[in-house]
Length: 510
Ligand code: ADP
Image 1 (cartoon, rainbow, N blue to C red):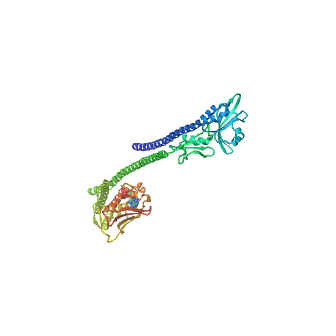
Image 2 (cartoon, helix red, strand yellow):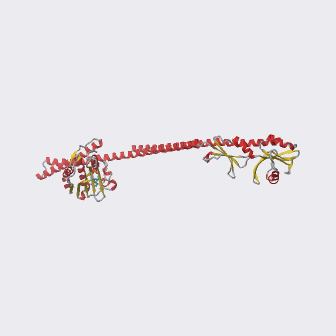
Image 3 (cartoon, protein in one colour):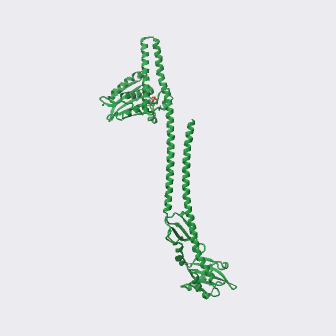
């Protein structure tokens, strides 16, 4: 009992450790890939912040340089100032505190248009927060007016006692074509893309196909291109694919190891259970065999003693006693034969001696040996042995033992059926021996088990019919040693038919 508890605890401990290890392996692998992804995201986020910051400070610094360089007392020279300080300004507009353009306050770099100034003063100026903006602080607006997109930077400057609003109309398409490629090159392992958050339209860059969303980071523009966002992704996804593959392999390996451990534990648990059951059956076998040995022995000794003491009433009675002694000693001898042969088979010793013989003769002689027992059990036996059967290679002693076992079983378990029918016939390539009784039969689910060593059917376990459970195991072993087999067909309550067949050609070669 203590050993059983230890075994169960050990099995449980192995199972728990296996599951624990598998969980550890799983979470380690999962953690590692989350960590890898996090590192990748952090690196790309830093890069995105750096890129957006770089582009914006380039514009903001240029703006600042221009605001610093503008002389409100000398607006006639504004054009030169612009060209020298700012590479991406398209036009500069200076408004007074009434929001009207001051004389010489509109300078265009390159081609200008009168329409723009008109639209600017009429439609755009009212929408810019010029009046509320603090002095010396840069403000900006990136928006659309009459279907055209503009980027404005502006600052309020003081001259004399008046405030002037200086507005820079940036040449933003030029920024995209000249500054963006320097900051966001196309031939790097990163994929840069700028999208309009509202429309989702790509404004610059390359498509980020096949990149999982988790591996894309976004950084919005805050000081220039409002509502535009830079997205950065890793171009070469083969590394991440390899990582994914490795993780999948890790999971498969963990799964396989766990299954192997679980299967082994289940296998060992079953093996232990089988072994325990075999041990139980063995001790039951020993007690049954001892009992079976004791019964005939005590009968022999009792009648022997009576004969020796001359305690017989008549010579017939003496003959009767002697017959009993003879019968019981035959029974004893058979039991001992069974046990010895079984023990030899169990040890793997080859116990058979084959020779060409007529199976019909062997069966008929075995039946003769059972006559007395049948009479005592008040049973009748009818036998039908097909004539002219071919000779087969067989071990006559073993076959006799098999037939006697089947007849003994029928007497032991099916005496109520009153008769036994034995038939030996040829069936295709085999000789088949059927031993049919009309007793209680055997439950379907025990048809295979009764041929196992030490197995006794549930129906007989509680009855006072003694047995060792090795008879049918022996019968089957003998049949198989002859290249055939032994089987049973039976329905509970309708008797049982045990069939032993041996092949005609290959007899004895198995
Ligand atoms: P034993 O007879 O010593 O128990 P066997 O191996 O000869 O061992 O038989 C195994 C079991 O098969 C028996 O215990 C019995 O339950 C069942 N059995 C065998 N022959 C018959 C039969 N003719 N009718 C019903 N049950 C049988």
